[in-house]
Amino acid sequence: MSPDDLRDWLHLLSCVSRGAARRLLARHGSPASVVRAGRAGWGALVSAEEANQLANPPAAVEQRVRRTEAWLAGGERRSILVIGDDDYPLPLLHIADPPLMLYLDGRRELLGQRCVAVVGSRRPSPQGDENARHFAAGLGQAGFCVVSGLAQGIDGAAHEAALHTPGCTIAVLGTGPDKVFPLEHADLSRHIARRGLLVSEYFVGTPPLAPNFPQRNRIIAGLSEGCLVVEAAMKSGSLITARQASEAGREVFAIPGPIHSPQSKGCHHLLKQGACLVQELDDLLNELPVGGLPRTAPLGLEADGGPAPSRRAVGSPPAPEPPEAPDQEHPLLRAIGPDTVSLEQLSQRSGWGQDELNATLLDLELEGHIVRLPGALFQRRRRA
Image 1: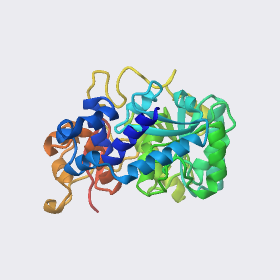
Image 2: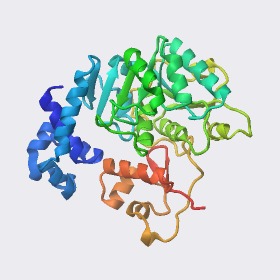
Image 3: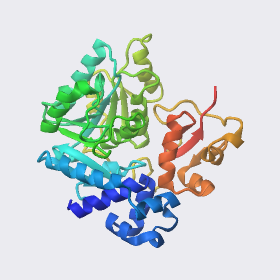
Image 4: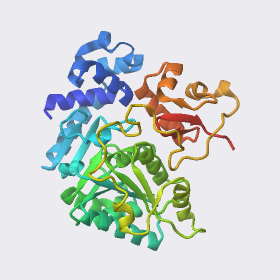
């Protein structure tokens, strides 16, 4: 990427949301063309505030350019991948909100390898830690790249076990590419940068912020052919990753545990909803698609382009019903109403663009207001 291209990308992504950036790129083709288009070219694709930011970029843009150039200069295997690049991972294009820019540190070619996500509790039991290492090492020896989130517990164990296998490992960060969280994984992060790959969609310098970690889980799920949940409580980010994997047409796997253990309840919930029960490595390998992910139709859609069969996604709670007091609700909750609606229907009802909807819907989902079903269908969550 040339310095001018880098500046244009950071200009665009610093000033507008991902959804607005995607709309602008769809119309104008490149960040440089977007910047040159001016207000007349931006039109209704951005808000008035975003248009002002594009026209008069804040000082943070120049600061980000300098930080990014310094970060790139700090390692020969550091690079930036943008949507549209020849080696942009095709599986990521099939998720609802593909990242527009990724910062890479390590072996970029691992993005083209067959991948399996291994995720789970930050406070695993000794057996959970052992299981994570056993299955991650087995997957790596079988040639699969193990993808996880560099978190404490299961994530770290999976990275460590896969790091020296033929498949190796990818860590998807919830921080900027120059930050490590948790700090206890500073050494592990350096080892992954040398032998595997660190991936982040967040600007250089971005600290650990709580909303970014659930957001990055869609990349873990999107890169992978399947998602193995080793241990998870019911309120766990691992269940978000499993649900996102299911929506994208990936297989979800779960390891059962003691019935009274809180760390097993999330896995048992997934198993009740159709996840594959895993007791040995072959349970995983035999269920992964032969030859890799299907490429002939968008994941989550039938071959004719229609929505996938209407079943509850693995990891989703029971079907909801609408809450009361609609006059005080978020406008998208009012637009959903009592129905099960598609993204297209919701766009028509609300007047919002589909890309902008995805980001807001994820916020509402994480706040517990809605549930997402296969085929980009949405429902209100029942209030207690």
